[in-house]
Image (tube, rainbow, N blue to C red; front, top):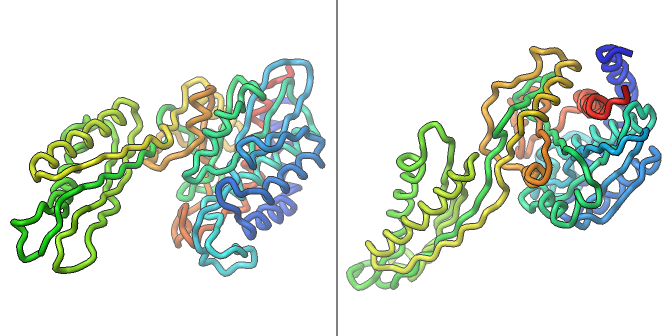
Amino acid sequence: MRRKELAAVVLERIRSRQTELTVLRRELHARPELAFEETATSEVVARFLERAGIEVHRGLARTGVVGALRSGRSDRAVALRADMDALPLHERNRFAHRSRHDGRMHACGHDGHVAMLLGAAEYLAQARNFDGTVYFVFQPAEEGKGGGRVMVEEGLFERFPVEAVFGMHNWPGIDAGRFGILQGPVMACSDEFEITIRGRGGHAAMPHQALDPVAAGAALVQAVQTIVSRGVHPLDAAVVSVTQFHAGDAYNVIPDEAVLRGTARAFKPEVQEYIEGGLQRICTGVASSFDVGIDLRYERGYPPTINPAPETEICRRVARELVGHDNVLTDLQPTMGAEDFAFMLQARPGCYVWIGNGPGEGGCMLHSPHYDFNDGIIALGASYWVRLVEHILSDA
C-alpha cells in the first residue's frame, strides 16, 4: 500500500476509537495528579497497554510507565513520549469532566497527550506494520519537577536503547489539523535565582543609621534589566525577570534583609552562561555600592529544547503526508516556555513537535484555569505517532 493511502487508513481506523479515547481522556482530566503522584494515571496507562498486548515496565522515576512493542526482526528502536502530570491549579470550568480534586487541574493537556499515545500504541499493537521496537514512554512530573531528567538518570535509554526519541505537545493558537515543527530551538531553558541582601535595619525616619537592603534591592532590580538589553546580542533571545521582592513587615522600619527571586530564559548555552555571570557581577557591584552583603543562588533548571535537523525533517515529512504541506508550520517563533523533554534530547537525537489545539481565545491558553484539551485532535495526534513509527521503522 502506498504511503498516502496508508495514512488515510490509519486515520480512519483510529478515528473509529475516538469515543473510547475521548472517554479515557476526560476521565484522566477529572482525576488529575501532580508531579510524581501519578499513581492512578499510571495504573490506567499500564492496564490499557497490557490489554493491547504490550509489554509493560513500571516504576521508572517512581510513577513512570514504559510500554515495549516489538515487530519483525530489526534491532532498530524508537521512543515516543507523553507526559502525565497535572498542575496545582484550581479549575474554573463547569463541564462534567472538570477536576474532582480541588487545587489540581490538567491545564496543559497532558491528559490528551496520554490519550493520543495510547491510541497509537493500540493501533500499532494490532497492525504491527513496522520492523523493530517501539517504546511508549509515559513520563511523570514534567511541570517543573524534571521527571524527564529523572527517567534519563535512572537509565531510561540504557534499559530501552533507542536511536531517537520523539515528543509532542498540544498548542492553543495553532489551528486544529495543523502541526508546528521547528528546527533548532523550540523552547528555552528555565533557570531560577534567589538573591538575599543583608543590610542593617533601623528606624525609617533615621535611614543614615541603617544599611538599607530595600534601596539596594531596588537598584539591583533596575540593573538586572541591562543583562539582556546591554549584554546579550540583539538577535539572541533571552529573558531575565525578577518576580518576587520580599522585605520588611512595618511601614516605619528599615528591615535587615531583602530577598529577590526570579527566572532566566535563553535558547543558547553561552547566553545562559552570560546571564548567570551577569547576575553575579551585578550583585557584587551593588553590594559594594550600598555596603551590604549579597548572596546569589542560581539554579539551572530545564535546558533549552533543541530539535536537530535530520529528525526534524523526518517529522515534517510524516506530518505533511498526513495533513498536507501547507498545514505543517515551520516558521513559528520558538517560545520562552520550558520543557523537560530537553533532557531526553540531550541523551538521544529526536524532535519535539506542536499539534494544533485550536484557537487560544476565551481563556483556553495553556496553564489557564479555563483550559481544556481539544478531543477533536486525538485521532490526528495518534495517527501522527503511528505514521512516524511506520516511516522510521519501515518493513519495506
